[in-house]
Image 1 (cartoon, one colour):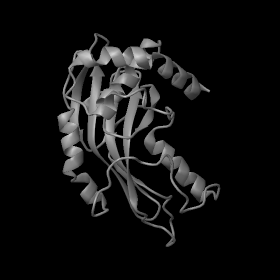
Image 2: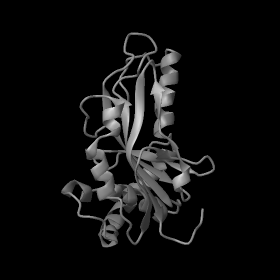
Image 3: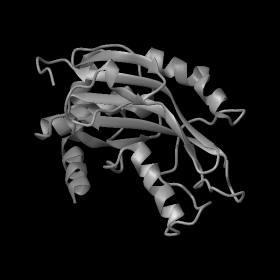
Image 4: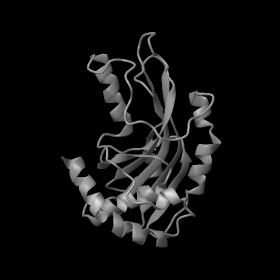
Length: 225
């Protein structure tokens, strides 16, 4: 219900934010970045918790190993399909460095890191599964929440190596092919460089989840939290 409420607020405020945002001097954006409100939902669990839960369901047989993972990652694939190649991808690095700039609304705090930013005392609003790496759209989402009365003072964009199917602990699908999930994570309070605590994990028998191109942005205001 909370997700639906936030989604409705986002849809109502999207047009207003889309008009206001270009004055913030973000780098030149492709046409797809300036389209209508581009998000279908705000997922309340963190990306790692979301996939961890799928893994737990798999272990309890509620979701069989080798079942398709959702949501489907829409980012570019990496060859060879290894965690090392994903971490070394110049595509991800270039995207992060290109958009790793401050503007009048948000200040860049961390550029092209290899972890996601989390803090247990900070309120997590949710994350959006993006079709492209777009801090612009992530800022739009954060501003939409903020304008509707739900504080949003930080956002984190990154690429995450995710399995296409739920990895098994046996030999049936221990290391499935990967997909690239482009995450826009939204937070109530300000996050800082020292809050980067999640660099990845092993799922199933030997599928490695890693993060690349992680940028952290803080709202440019006087709030310290």
